[in-house]
Image 1 (cartoon, rainbow, N blue to C red):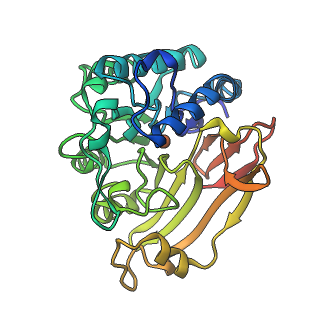
Image 2: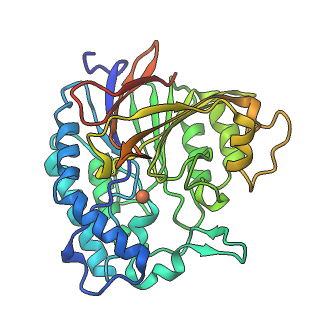
Length: 356
Ligand SMILES: [Fe+2]
């Protein structure tokens, strides 16, 4: 690795849920928020700082950027002002930990949560299925995140949404924001059309494109227009870097137009420094049935079980029980391959995955 534009590395982080008592005057609105707040305070009292410091220690001249997959904050700030402060402080903190190169985030659903608007956030139908992801509070994003993105990405003006692109050599990175009116589909279509000649396309998105356990059982929790997006992205050697589930996965699909790879990361530090155990799903038929209740899967469909080339996930043991694994990834990007080293608190990677 010499940091040139053909061979370089990217540090990739998943959900972080930055939080602190300064952003809360009122009590949590419900039990879920209460548990989340306690978890976050414990994470940010130590383990999350340690995880970020460990990640920062990997950086050298071969890393042009650090990317982060959304839910940089817990959200649930008491009001727009306190949620803006939470986002501002989280981003400031990231710049202190990772100085000297752009820090490139995407928006996660938690980043739009304000205590007052919380009941409007996740909407459920009478069967308990999540139907709605819109309805969060976008004003803190406008105030704290969009100007930050403009600075870090070197944009000519502050954008109207957190959709943006970066280029490294012939690789196109599309950072997507599905949480504003209109969603991200047209932005992705335009970005692909404007740069037709690429080596790899990376899509960085809080929501996954392909469902994977456990938080994507509802259509509302994967990217809207997933079939259309799969169709657009498959011919372009695309790697999706996602977060949101708080579980880590590698999924590779055979689409009629090419192979799509999705890496899902979690940097929640609840299980930091616990060695992960790899699991491979071989029974795709029952996996698909359990994971895609909302999809009508037809034979030869991109979502059909026979089109899974690979599905790996990993767990660690916490109090004797399998639990979600935690860490970050270093992507090694070159002409011959793209690999992801998954770090979980040891000096060496816990595993190295071949993405392309
Ligand atoms: Fe999250």
